[in-house]
Amino acid sequence: MANTPSIEYLKQVRSQDIALGTLDLSEFGILIDGLYFYKNDKHLTDFMSLNLLTRSFCRIAVDHYPILLGRPTINSAGKGVIRVDPDNLCLPDFADINVDYPAEMFFETLSNKAQDSSDVVFFNTRKFYQTSGVGRLPKASYHRDHASCVIRLLRFRDSAYVALAFSFSHVLFDGIGGISFMNHWAEYTRNLSDVVNSAYVLSEQPISDREVMEKCFEKIEPVEPPFVKHFKKVLSPVSMEMPKNIAPVLMASPDVDIIEEQHLLHFTADNLEQMRQDIDKNESTNITLAALMTKNIVLANQRTYGRLPKTSYMVIPYDSRVRCDIPKQYAGNASFAAIAPLSPEMVVNEPYKALVQAIKEHVSKVEPGYTKAAILTIENNLGLLYQASFTLCNSPESSYLCMTSMRFMPIHNVDFGYGKPCITAMDYSFKEGMAHLLANKQDGGVDLYLNYSDKTFKELCKLRDIKQYANTIY
Image 1: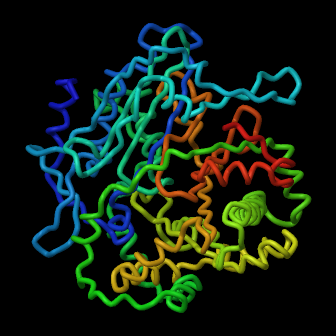
Image 2 (image 1 turned 120 degrees about the vertical axis):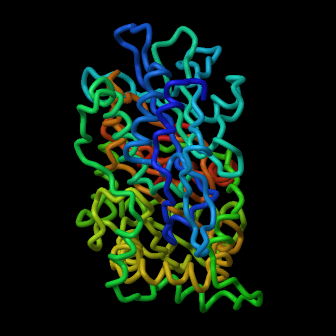
């Protein structure tokens, strides 16, 4: 990071230890990242200025997100913390990357049926990595110095598009907190002159104090989630003794491997609504889409492996902020996953409507006590969760889909003063079976990014219901 004035400002950050909650600790090695494309329609010479974005990032970090500048450590009480030391900062990693091809070379298009509308444009991440010569974009990591926040601006040759690629450690915040940070950073950038003159206050300030969530859960009684009961029943007890203090164990977690077999399905607004009407018109789009994908993942696995798996796992993360008294401005990790262990015979043979209800039984009746019990399980029965993580995969023994919905997050509001992003995309992410739903503002549909083996994805795309409702982009 070569911007000297920005580095000097970072040294004004207050020395402090920021305590990490159990859910924060459980995210070591996992990332939050993405790609936002901005179009320079006005032909500005300093469009998406690296200097401007660096300066505003440093300001927002010092003023509201000092956790971005710290290093993980164990304090004298044995607790996991992010230590912010002005003399030993973990600096953000910023750089421009000049791509020797137009952005359009990596775009895929789909005809937009709306009258007088342009084609819907998608960024093909796999094509970019295979043909651009750029190689992998660097990922955030606490195992390298100055790498907990990595920002790259992709500047394409002879193209009006600039892509902002970002990668953050998931320890810092969950998806909701991450998108809030992106909007706060953009807000600071748009108003940087006033920020520098101490004449600007964020419209909605983040709450980073982890004690806020801890105090909320102190009042909540744990209720063991059904999926914990399931894993206790089907998994053998762990013979090894786990340490009582899990902070050092979790903080030593290696970086999770990135999956290159990424695919993109697009569901138009019309097809989404038709799917909902066909499956269960009384339920939401998200839950009916979850049922569609769950059934067809099992069928695709059956075609690949020659038999049904023993269990089908459908996973949907949920936000604890909306289920208890955690403020919506809370910037730490407040999300956990609800897991539905399903009978593959039921998934394949019962109508979609029954599958919707089976999924809802596990993921829609989530209560604060489930999260409290999950936190206690991490703290007291970590071995069980490690075992479960190996079960959650697509194999001859199991099918697995974890569907994170980002449809209603304000991603498309991230305006640095140059306009809102016109295209959003996912970089390569972790774990096979993971899926991310992003709203597509170009046509009102949904993009589903799926980590899935190429061989089995080909089988998925042959299935009747996938062909009926989805467009395969890559």
